Amino acid sequence: MTTTAAPMVLTRRRVWTIFAALLAAMFLSSLDQTIVSTAMPTIVGQLGGVEHQMWITTSYLLASTIVMPIYGKFGDVLGRRHLFLIAIALFTLASLGAALSSTFWAFVIFRGLQGLGGGGLMILSQAIIADVTPADQRGKYMGVLGAAFGVSAIAGPLLGGYFVDHLTWHWAFYINIPVGIAAFLVGVFALQLPSKRATRRIDVPGVVALSAATASLILFADLGGDDAHGWDSALTWGLGALFLLAAAAFVLIESRAEDPIIPLSLFRNRLFVQSTAIGLALGIGMFSVLGFMPTFLQMASGTSAAESGLLMIPMMAGMMATSIASGVYVSRTGRYRIISAAGVLVMIGAVLLFTTMTAQTPIWVIIAYLMIFGAGLGLVMQNIVLVAQNAVSATVVGTATSTTNYFREVGATLGTAVFGTVFATRLTERLVAVFSGSGASADQASSAASTIDPSTLAELPQAMRDAIVGAYAEALSPVFWYVLPFLAAAVLLAITLKQVPLSHEAGLVARGEAVLEEPADGAPVGTAAQEGPRTDEDPVPATLR
Image (cartoon, rainbow, N blue to C red; front, top):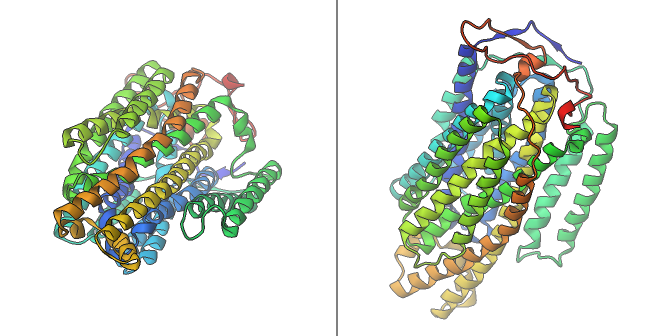
């Protein structure tokens, strides 16, 4: 049990005020990710890390993935307000460090620190929405959050392209400073939520074991595909063995912990497990596009950073439209199964189209492919989180939210690491061959391949540019074939989701931490749930047993 202050009054005005703070934070984190995607070819070229560019994305995703369960559990135990403000501050300060980085690996470290804050922004935003809105109304709010991601994702490539073309890539991170300060101030004054005091022992051994398992798994995948180590390296397989040991230790620790960071009882809930597995597959598919498509657009299609940013707009526009529409649909009908399955099927169609792209593919065709992919993503992304939240008790909604996102980010990180390794390896081989064919020595060819960026490409002879563009196209397009089996599995899982009623009660009300305002007209912010009260020891609703 936990001790709480007097229950707050949950009014409609307070809900929308809190929601404004969440939108500001969501804009901050998503703006950064899309700016970096557009600026990445220039960043790695100027810092001399083309062959290691996957670490820019992997470091962020790895850090954010590790801390997700921590934010989720600590939010359930201690309250979410102070954690939310800490996440914003950490993200903003790390952005300043990234902007000031003068070496590739220093930049990677600050990207990891950004991930420590970004993971909290993602998890806490979704959990706070569950705290203040009932599940049968939450789809509308989640849809708007998804649309906010889309708005910032449109602004990100535009700003990233502008900074690269007219200023320097450092401004892709300087921009986070004023945005972060504004989001922090909005959180201080608008995010009024109850705080709690923990009376159970914090599961520190579980945190350590889960962090070790996550880090070793990702590093195992990274080093396995790295030319300097490879799958026959003792270090690679040492990390693989460490993952197995840490994962086994984590399960043992959680089975005995007084208050586990991820209760194993969650995995007895079939609906929660299915929605989490769908999220994992989506992570693999989504980040294979978000992580590498700007590179393809800049190098394989010969566009500038600004133009590649513009070409990402249709994808986000498609996602915005379907995210809002699907949120309204689910709120009105309560039917999430058909919309989720349809979304994954649309994504599969788009990925199949991506496999056909070459350096000669017309720009308007790429725009159409991206819009289709974004539309599919918007249909399923937020709804899967809603399904997972509705499948568990209100007392563990933060833990459930973080666990679902954790496995999605594991998929994203593994997909980025493995597919990024495949892409980088194929690309390096082809670029070295191109430069060697032009008369460069082996060392010169290797050096040129590791420092190529869009501005350097533009200064080369036309024949050399064509050869390099072809190398990028040949290296990236086949990668999308590896995504398809995971999305096919997600379709099967979505089709078989159990359709259960959405809860009528907001999380704060269900836990006794808030009371509803007296309704002046119509229904209040949230109404009493149809089921009886749930407890920490009973995270599985009766309808799902």
